Length: 42
Length: 404
Image (cartoon, each protein chain N blue to C red):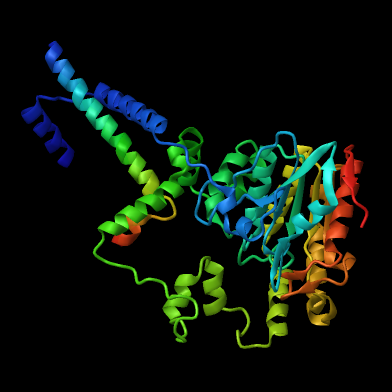
């Protein structure tokens, strides 16, 4: 695999992994017993 | 399938073809992201002075350490450095509420017991409004984990064997998981109340501050999200504004635990019956219950405190003269006391004192707002101080107890 392709692969995977981590923070905060928008949405 | 289409699209548009190794790398980036966010997000410490109970009854040496209902942090113990730390576990029965005065039994005891082993006495109250037996077990576990010097547990005779309400605060589930990992005998009990999610949250909260503080962050997030909403909650009416009775729906909305709903809509006794009859029914429910759930919890509390080696006083809270003097209710109370006495073997230790009889029998002259809520402690603080001092002396400590 060329260096450029490998860099792109890693960049995409880093983006996915870090985005999931950010999503996990939002889920953790929203899932406290306050359940802010999940509850509101229902 | 959608995932196949996504992979095709990623290959076509981005020239990206994932492999099984990609999953591992994404997982690693995910962990790196969590650690990085944890390092950046500031720790949210609970300010105990702003707690409404501590604000109402401020005391330099005694304070409630219980988080708000719904906050999974549960309890936030204070420092053990340089003090003789007492954990006092109890529900609303440890309060004393009278016109113009609001205090707690541990505060009254602290006035008679200021120093032990040359160290000032500091009392963390694991005070939980509407505390049920499983909540007490969670608090016992948290107190032992905190390494306190003495544990005092108040058993409320109204609720201790009541099988309709074994747990009041499910935000202690994480505490239950965390403190029972090394107690296999308690696993069936814990597993019957908590889910795998509680265990995972607890594990994550141990490692990541932003997960542990999620209740506080959630509140802030809620405030932000509310601003975005086109819907507006009506502002709560000011006290005294308007004379209209709250609607039935409003009254249900104000209920915080299921037992409040069921005691209204599926009562075991007619709500319009005289007070004495309703009180008798409450005790009768506990006395005649065949459920062994609370019995098991009581044994687990005994097992935890005896194995901890921490001097522990477990007493049965006071009830009013109306209970003791009414033959119908007194009989039910005696049955409850006998059932509590059957658990003495679980508390069998030279470092543990277990009192299955209501302490009201040894503290005549107290005044009550109802069957169990105290208006005037009367001689109770002296009796409790005496019991605590005897236990401390018997376990090799040097308490400086002020004579009543």
